[in-house]
Each structure stands twice: as C-alpha cells, then as structure tokens.
Length: 356
Ligand code: NAD
Image 1 (cartoon, rainbow, N blue to C red):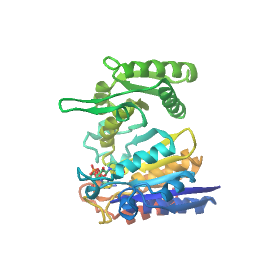
Image 2 (cartoon, protein in one colour):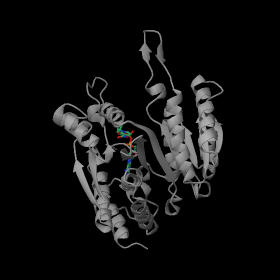
Image 3 (cartoon, helix red, strand yellow):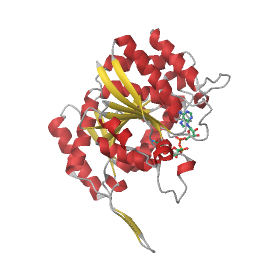
C-alpha cells in the first residue's frame, strides 16, 4: 500500500526517538512491499524558534494531507517561562483539535523481561495487559475558566454525543480483546459523571451486548490499578481522570520510555506519540529509550493503515530485543550495560529482519 506519514520530531529527545521509529517503519515498509512517504516538519518549540508559531501553516497542511502523524514530544524550559507568549503545548492542543482526534488510547503491558523494572513487586505486575481509552477533547480542561481576586472556576461539561462516541471506541477495542470494560467516574459527586455512567451503560447494552461493563469510582480505580492491575482489560475514562490515571499506570511498566499512545477520531487518520515528554534532562545525549515511539509506530500501522501483521511484527521485534537483554539507561537492571538510543533502535531492527 501507499501512505503518507507526517513526522514531527518536536523538541528535546523527540527527534532522537522519532529517528529510530522512522528507521523501523522504513524497514517494515521495505520488507512488506509498502510505499510509506515519511515527511518531516517542524512542530512545537523548534517551530516557535524558526517561524514564531508552534504549528506553522506548512506543518498543519502536511498533517491534514497525511494518513497519519508520528510525533516525538514537545516543550522544554526554554519555552515555559511564566511570561512566555507562545507555548509548544498550545500547538499540540491545536493539532489535536485540527485533526479531530477525541480518543486517546494508551496500552499498558508489562514485558516479562522488565518485570523487575517496575517499582511494584514483580508478582503484582506480571502479565499486566490493559488499555486506557481516555476522552481527549471535553471535560474540565476545555470548560469555561474564570478568575477573580478571590476565587477561580473551571467548568466541567460533557455532552451525550461525546460520551457515546468514546464508549463506542472502548466497545470496539474490548471486542478485539478480553471483552471487559471498566468505566471510571465520580458519579457519587459529579453530575457529568452521572451522565457518563448512564450513557456508557446504554451504549454498551444496545451496541455491545457481548461486552461486560463495570463502573468504578475514580478513587477506587486509582487503588485497584496498583493492587490488582492484571484484572483490567479496557479502562474508559473522561479527560482529567484519564490524564492522572494513565501516568499512575505507566509506572507498572517500569519507565515512561516504553509506552506508546494513539489519538484517534472519526477518520482513520490518527496522531501517534510516546507518552513521555521531551525529557530536557537527557536531551542531546543519545540515551533516551526509543521503544515508546517505536511501539507508537506499530499503533500507527494498526489503527490508521490497517496493517495488523506489520504492527505485530514490530511489537514482536521489540519483545525479542528486550528478551535478549537490550536495555537503555532508564530500564537498566543491576550489572546490565546501557545501550544508546541508536543501538536500541538497531536491536529492534535486527530482530525485525531476523524474526524468531
Ligand atoms: P518527561 O516525560 O519529559 O520526563 C520525565 C522523566 O522521564 C525525566 O527524568 C526523563 O529523563 C525521563 N524520560 C522521559 N522519556 C524518556 C525516554 N524515552 N527514555 C528515558 N527516559 C525518559 O516529563 P517532564 O520532565 O515533566 O516534561 C518535560 C517537558 O516535556 C515539559 O516541557 C513538558 O511540558 C513536556 N511534555 C510534553 C509532552 C508531549 O509532547 N506530549 C508530554 C509530557 C510532557
């Protein structure tokens, strides 16, 4: 197949990790006979420096015309002073809105070779394999904001349509997995959560009768994610609860550096990025872990291009590299030697070319 992919390295370690994901995508394309046009563009702080705009028109045009967008990370201390006029984060929110992506998917799996990398006991994280479906464009982050001398207000709003469409995303995913959804809310206190619970219940009953739906209060979910993470399959959450719980859950896997994400909308075009930020503390040293970005490229093939076998090939290659002891500094065990970003990318490429 032929596909166009916009490649936005971004800032900090973004370009370093994206370079490895691009090499992996090129190798997969060559092996399976696909023509992937991978076109780079400036985005985030780098684009602010060059064009005075975090999302320049040329970058936006490229993304609009692409079948998928691969992103590294944006931001850094250089653009985050309290009086900064232009912020890279604003460019990311704009890009998500322009692409109409409303569902953020974050799979969390604990690779057997990394069972000791988590701060939790190996016995607790062994076999963890769940996916968050987080609503991305509604809720308190986007509601009206007011501030006076003496008080501040953030309005939280959800429409029936917003809850219906994200529940459908979760339902379709659950159907291809273990057929269980836990929907997370705070319905004992929040009106938006009571609406969320009612709509999720109706959509699952009417459209996904084969899926088991359980409701869980967000405070209990925070606890159960640590106590019995293996029990989860698909977790459905609104925007802010998802933001917080996904960072908590990332610790099960041991490092922010190994987890991918996909942001999807009604169209097949999606935005794919690792869950970590631009890591200014290690940027430019070539030591960042590229696995989260490489696995994001696998999600891109799966969700935007429909190339399931190719996605699985990348995931298997990552698994082989880790099983064989490939480690960057963030997932290093005692007595192990750290690879550079490029060397880790190469280990995945080697495993891809020589599958087990
Ligand atoms: P961060 O995720 O960049 O880094 C947190 C810690 O994890 C750091 O110690 C970092 O070195 C480490 N880390 C992250 N990714 C790693 C990788 N691939 N390999 C090895 N170690 C890795 O979070 P932060 O420090 O809070 O934020 C830094 C900047 O990134 C900020 O400007 C923030 O706004 C931005 N940010 C961007 C995104 C995004 O682009 N979507 C997401 C989160 C944060």
